[in-house]
Length: 495
Image (cartoon, rainbow, N blue to C red; front, side, top):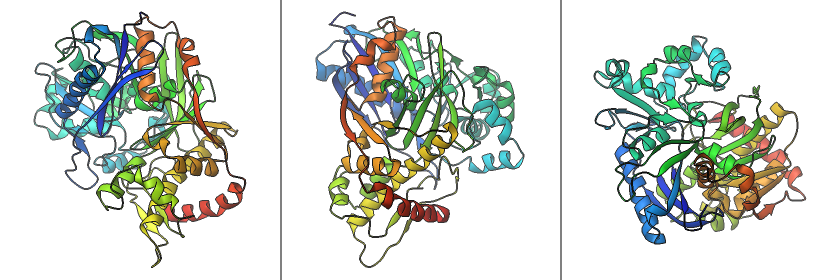
């Protein structure tokens, strides 16, 4: 790859879009983020305006090119990584969405999912898709839109509408409507995809009520899906060559490409994935079996656990309670006290994910006294995030029958040293932060490079991963952790 050519990674997240230009040695040359509004029509409901998402994509791309001084004609390929289960349905002719995007955090289909479980469908859903029946996933969100928008179901069955997760929507817009595609990492999050047969499941579509006519074509994670056409600020003809859901992309960007390697991304939520290779490992502890990626002849799976609220809890302290003025302030505030003073915070602000899967759970603060201060609440918030992740790892270790010795971390909150030390203490294993924590975008860039034929394989990128800091469990961590975990379990039971 010539030195004057670059990869453009579009990281379309829950609260904003980040565009990154990455050079031939996988160094980030420039980075720009553009936020967009969150929409909360009712308690527990979360939506995005798809046009606001698209505007954040084009604005961030234009800004990163302007900031870097690099012209669009120097971009060799584009990789996309995205918030995964967020659901959009749009008109194939006009390209216009027929309803707001329903976000992965949204709980509006919880009752529908409960009815499916009560009817005895959970076993077949899990066996087919690797997922539990939960409002988190895309299938019931898509069915909800089709049932609520006038004529939508009939139009969908007639082939006039297109369904997609955000990767599909962004690729459609980048290619001027020429490509209606997704990759297996995103398809496996819909509750409509058979992870064993590696294709859409007609039985799941019938069960959930999503016509197969609206589904995108599933292509490998590294593949030329189409080329840019009519995108503001970009020349036509740039290959869109890599797609992966954000958490799988981070696993790839952390170069956890060997069986048994694991990472945790701390973003709006927290997501722990472990590479299980060519085997789709069944979880006996309510973790998810998901597709990691499809690259060349390699089709890889992962075990995953998700914490719905992680960094979003810090945002809530900032925006909802005015405890802090900015998110980074929480570390110093929390570090100003030696412990939480007996306060426990369960950040179930949008239900509880794995391994609990309690969609009607709500956040809870316990142990409050007259001596409780802002600092105690701040520290309890960080501890609650770390505790939630510890629950996931404990379940994962039981499924796999062995303990992790190292967890690679990334995402914005991984910069919080106190949180990372808490995590190491609670997990009892090393927590390792790389020099580049934008691993989600890095994964998309590597996939695009492979898809466009720029890199021969992931091995060409392996030497670029560098450790920035390693957090080891404290000498007395094991003794104190047991009591903390008991108090945590009591609080979770009340949430």
